Image 1 (spheres, rainbow, N blue to C red):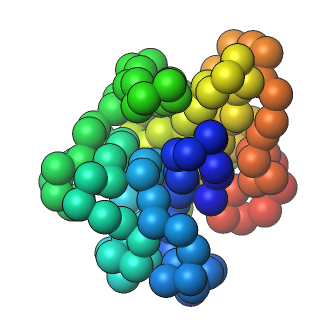
Image 2 (tube, rainbow, N blue to C red; image 1 turned 180 degrees about the vertical axis):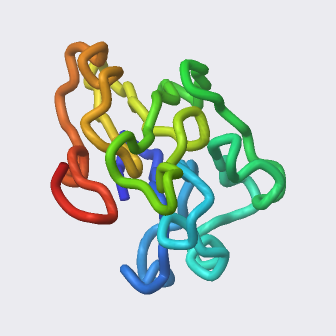
Amino acid sequence: MIEAGKTVIYVDPVSREADYSVLPKGDLVLITHEHGDHLDKKALAMFTKPQTNTIVSKSYNGKVDNAIVLNNGETHSFEDISIKAVPAYNIVNQREGNPYHPKGNGNGYVITYCGKKIYVSGDSENIPEMADLKDIDTMDQITFFSHRGLT
């Protein structure tokens, strides 16, 4: 959960990780990709309200009602917050020759509020596009991790 002024933002909510029913209702939800360990509808139901905005990657399109789909490189504004979708994918970690997270499928996000930038990597390895991210003030703790560990 991120609080940006009066706006409450959730990223990849999963009910096994937190009891969202005791947390504030969300104004904005960011979903990085379609895997169940990044969103479950039980968690979403606990903290959303009718006016909650949900931003999803193209891999989650159609799985959350009224969601805004952002492709890598696209930006959406919510009140005084800017959300930019950035690449998040695997190069090394694969299953049967296919990346766990294919390029262009999921999103990381750069959240800009009051001149500060927060980078949320999603499920990604240390990909070349990360070098293009400039003036990041805060990164999530899993930026250089994948499902298989540090890359």
